[in-house]
Length: 181
Figure 1 (cartoon, rainbow, N blue to C red):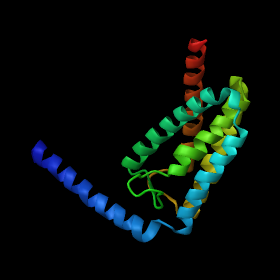
Figure 2: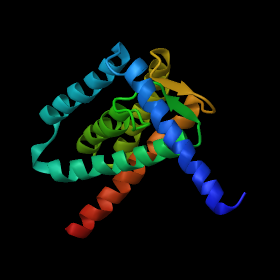
Figure 3: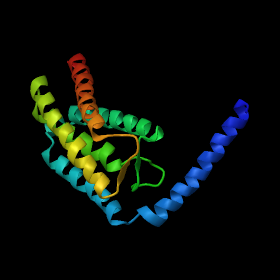
Figure 4: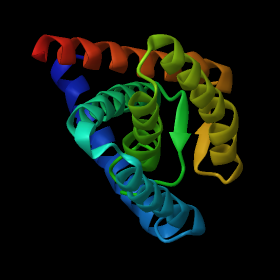
């Protein structure tokens, strides 16, 4: 098969996937109780974050949160594309991510840690506790309520990744902040 035919086949497969994905979302995902849990995990953490965030440092804290969001989303897209896991309930039909986790829960958890713990030692200890909670409580819960499906993945793999995401984001944010000063 030549490159052009292979590309046409990829495009046709994507078109078929798009139609199946939207149909599945409309029939089996949107407005289910799991979908509503996803909505709650968007609204409540955002409201709590707004109440708890240090408004004097909101710009740097939010920038740090965006770094966490970018890294979490990038790794989630890679894992989803490699079919290591699957999300059975999506907030939006064409976004194959657990939106509340990558865009809200993980960034907010780490933003609050970044805000509270300024030294690396304290930050890494708190980040490790959050990583343990995410990998061994939140992920199994998401599997249990059928929002998340493990295919070729194990919870233990997520644990160091959460720590790396937070540490790399802090490293970048701290370096940018020090250059600004």
